[in-house]
Image (cartoon, rainbow, N blue to C red):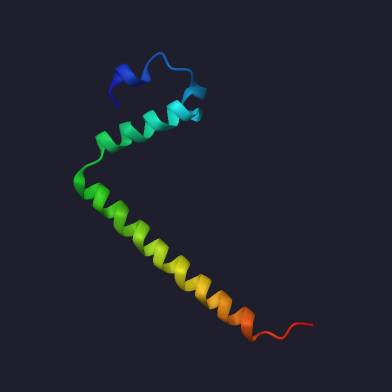
Amino acid sequence: MPPKFTENRDPWYWCTAEGSEMFNLLVGFESTFRDKLQWLEEAENLSIVFEKNRKEGLHSAARQPKP
């Protein structure tokens, strides 16, 4: 990270809404296009797994008899 953005900041600054937004911008500026594509692919794979697990959970819950 460029020193001008990170120096003279309180440690709690990054836990605020403004600090979180700034941190995301800094990470975006530092990452390459390839890094961003890899992140998107991993997020898509995670989304697919969540959807699959959700559907399997609904099907298994529908098959179980209620006491």
